[in-house]
Length: 156
DNA sequence: GCCAACGTTGGC
DNA sequence: GCCAACGTTGGC
Image (cartoon, rainbow, N blue to C red; front, side, top):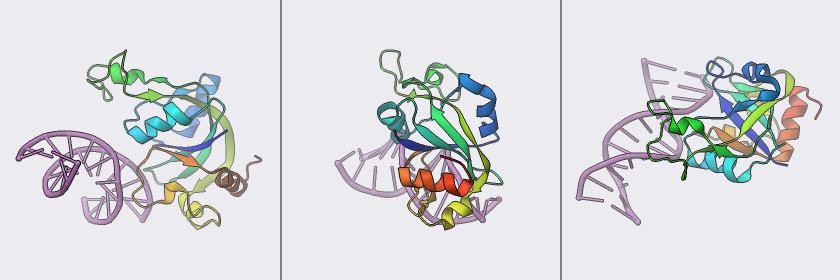
């Protein structure tokens, strides 16, 4: 089992939105970065857990816990002609972008704010804190996962 | 709105 | 294959 951090702008799609999807979950579509794609395509397994991180908003931080709920499959938005995520070089035979579905796993009692993450002992190496880090999906070490859960008051 | 970081693009 | 220019991200 691996652990991850998924970034999303809550104005666009928030942890509450994911929770509202219930067991249906949500395709993590629109990722157009190769490293983030590779994480989904090559390294994720059904049942992996991840933090849902709110970015570009008044209160950036970890808002909840999600679960990877599907195997990787082609991101359908790459085929939507005229759509925001259309990729003219992608074909059904050779899709360029792969994604997984995620679903709500567990609420956390309160948002763990970015500045708390930054000042917490044991979280110094989290990739989200790296200056200029723009990856929308980053791996999280098991120790880091447990530390965040403890700080956020989650039984893990 | 600013600015630093950094991935991508495209000319050579 | 190099590298400058450009666009995007994201915290502040």
